[in-house]
Image 1: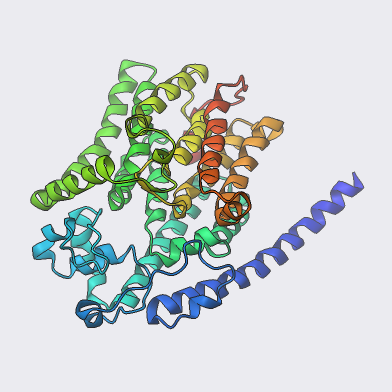
Image 2: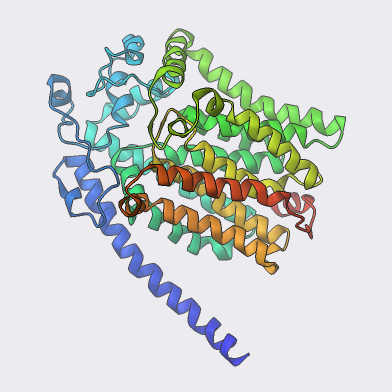
Length: 431
């Protein structure tokens, strides 16, 4: 007992020291990459470690010179920024005539281009791309902290913030997420607000989820899965009617944004459909291992597995959190073009799995601790994927790893885990 008491006294100061030291390193990498993003001064070469995919700098042409973007970073943000400068001719953004410096057709909906045209496009490219990342992180951390508050798991907040910042700024994958100007945290926000909105039956949360999901449509397969299982989880006709209402909040929000720019939206959908049906798979896409048809039907197969989980868990929706973690992992490599800087999409599960373990008192059982820490382990090890590739000399190893971890989490809820508390406890805490 004295040893345990001594450990508790020492552990808190030790964590504070580790937290501060790591955040000094985190801040250093953040400053270096931010400077390079704004000024294109190559300060990112001093990063430790270097980004997973190296640096993709904006090439020189008359258009990039005009917006002072030559040698700047955030290449994926460029798909929105440059076409949005001429919003009246947005149709070309979805063809090879796009103003993107690499002639990549945009895969972002017209509403997102419209928002960029009246906001970020008013700034020169370097500052606009930095602002894009800064706003994204600010929205994420505000939502992240709020989730910990309403779930009453505040004691785990700072270790979780450390985990997120470590993965974003001290790993090759996280630094590539920032270097490419990706949108993955918006996807994470959409997942987080969706689950919070459903289990707390809050339409405003669902609206926020739809708003964030609309930024990046790769979020839709997972959201489709969650909404369908939410409806199948209904215990009565009355509950089903209210569940349909919540699902409609999401659906109608998406439809509303799409109808605002219907003509451009059709061109966007045609391009998106062509990419998923005709393009060659790249990066970590599941289609490198399985036929396209099998991969594209994956969300429907996951619905079937999810329904089995519902029946096994006796309609305790929150008990499906490990299943959703597994589904989220496998769906990050579902698109035809899939890269591992989508790992930040999964950060939403950090507060959810902590609350899951607390709500059902599974921290008292080895299986509960195993699930929680196994997920943390996956997020960290996946953020160092380039090191794994160097060891095994094959990118397919990473795809197999994703599949393995996803299978573990998807199948775990089918085990006979005794839930000590009912789902209603969530509502009591949230309210």
